[in-house]
Image (cartoon, rainbow, N blue to C red; front, side, top):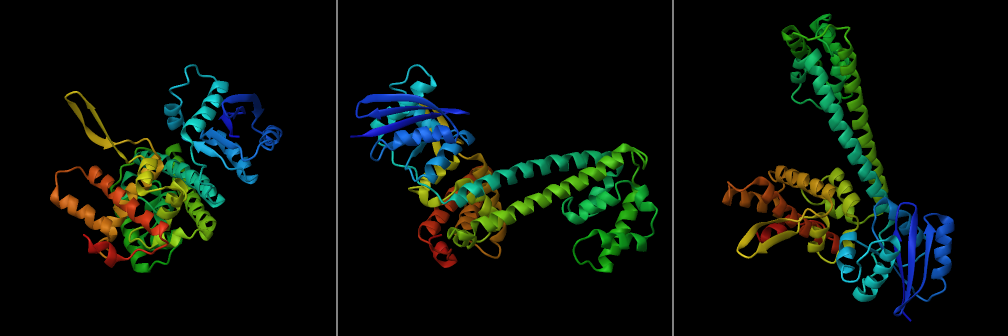
Length: 401
């Protein structure tokens, strides 16, 4: 006897349809809480090895998934796009109850495999990574606001160091948001202020160089506002906020490292030249356990770099990537390629050589296209390392290049 539970999950409730052989024997609605799940549990216990299917609906389906995992039930969590395609032949109207029925019928027709149940560490990494991305977006906004505020108070200050980033720069902005706050000191006093502002060891020679540069920029600046203006206080605040958010980002990465200590693949991914701990943590947070994919091409589809083409009559559209997958993972891997190419000077790899060969053979080809192709090469390599529990070997990887 084949028994299928089709569950349509919404924000606060879930509709359940029980299909036994060819007949729907029961339909009911539960709340997404412990009493509701206990009702579902009672029904599940009435059958031997029931099949369970529901759509992945983001945070709404997380509660049901967690409950099923805690109680050791196998389930199939299906992508909504796939379920829509598979249910198209027998679903005409759309209601929650009909969707639950449709899921059960799709399971009976397609015989989906149970979803691979990952180590709970991956779910925690995913939540941490999304928080990291939120902080990253907040940092970008705060930096933009800091730049805007500095244009009123002391725009030249952005040239005091080689880059407008890092704790030393933010501390200098907090202390010297207006040229008048610089000009009240001489070079020696300013050097002591610089030494006090940096959390790292710095020699007096470098501190004096920065102090003299500050004095030069302050004398050149024609500020738009007086030293007691609100814009000066706003500039100081934004510098403090950027530093605070950057500290939160670093704390998230540290927590992700602690969470991933028991995951074997971390050391294999880190063995690839140009991939550091931050990239590894973020990638695992978005992609999860690579072993749950049946091939590297499946990973490509998951992150949305699988190629699609369109033909209609004589019209042929240029092939491109689907972009239907995980956008965060695409962004992480795109930046990873840039790091791999930068590291190639000292540690070349099959991916960096592939990237450089493509750039040389087709210099007019857009960098983005070449980078996407390199991402595909990187995914195949990382997938191989994780599946085979193997470290990256430069000699083996470069042998076929």
